[in-house]
Length: 154
Length: 154
DNA sequence: TATTGTTATACTCTATAACTATA
DNA sequence: TATAGTTATAGAGTATAACAATA
Image (tube, rainbow over all chains, first blue to last red; front, side, top):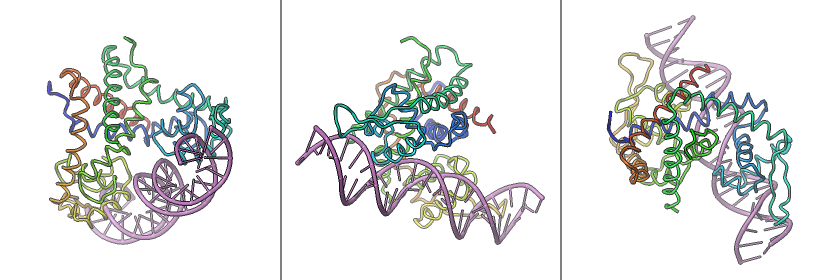
């Protein structure tokens, strides 16, 4: 019980966590709660913009989502048709576009996050204050350390 | 700084973690280290069987991977062609098939895990013993609590 | 009649290559 | 010449529906 972190025991949990975040009923319900006929990557664009709290370039959205530029372009077409985002030419660089949420897009992202964060909060509701704080700290550190490893590979 | 776990701050990290686990260079390198021309879901089948340390039914593999049955059937075709798994009729139920790793399949899964777990271990190498232990404990608890929420939805 | 798995098909998500416009 | 983005196309990953075999 008092053994050190056993990576082999943790790995399946990490994989399941990944699935819960991407393809679970949780995600489907949150999409319903957002109340829009939108696909999941499209919603990811919205929450990326929402969490950034400012307009972002296409390339910046792609970098944060860890996908490739042309994919974001396609997603933005759909979002723009739905009136969820607006494309504005970057005043500092005529080549670039700044993508900003519309009121409708921002509200939808807000409703989605409300649902997801509600479940997260509920999951740790009966944790001790200290455990919650510690988990947040260590999780962020772990992800950063792991991403540093990825960066080292390039 | 001594604030409680802020779900909104943690969410982007969780999403990035998910990407690192599924589509990062880390995964690509581990695939190379395994030394087989295999796709990622195919490798997921192998490590699922490897971690189980026993033959599994098709349905059980699907459940653990959180995908649907027919998808696993398709993956198994390729793995069987490559001599990485064997299908055996379950002696207790003629309808079911038990899938077991061959020596070749087990060795490939072992090499893959060796690479992945090596990076994980490296990522936490300079953590204190206590932080490692605590993180493992809380991560597992978090995933379980979250999955309980998912189960509640059905 | 219910369960286990397979076959056939369609859909979702993401990448690569070639191109346009601006820097 | 290099960078930001787009268009067109191809590929990877997964699901649904219809079916066969056994329980």
